Length: 174
Image (cartoon, one colour):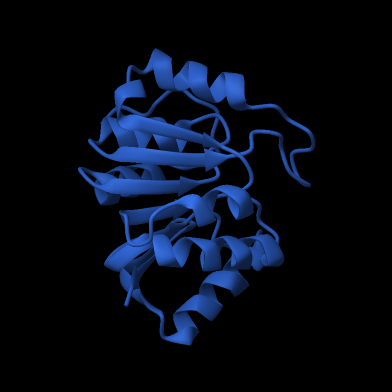
């Protein structure tokens, strides 16, 4: 699969793994930035429900990404496979039907508090046995590592095989 020409911090090896895992699945994406993951997963045959408020965060600052996200979705001709939901995860996710998704890809705000909150809001939306993917599981983002490790230790999810590819962590919901 050809890598979409969209701004992203996702490495080639992470992108290949994300596309492989998402292929043909119903995907919930929490945090979209400019649409790299959205487009990549849709090109792999996934239907992607993409949640982002598109107004930046503490790291990026007040960055409006909605226009860039939609432009990239349309430019790559995947708009029929994408449902864009604009709003904060704590507002949008509770409105979605429980156990609707085969896979959740979480790559939103990277503080521990935000990552832990996104995990708790996402878990009910994934089918039992579904896959949970977390980007930026690395020493650079200790909040993400802590939140994902706490989920694994809780017994609600177990490490997938392979458990990580680059900074992409994978767990299976029990």
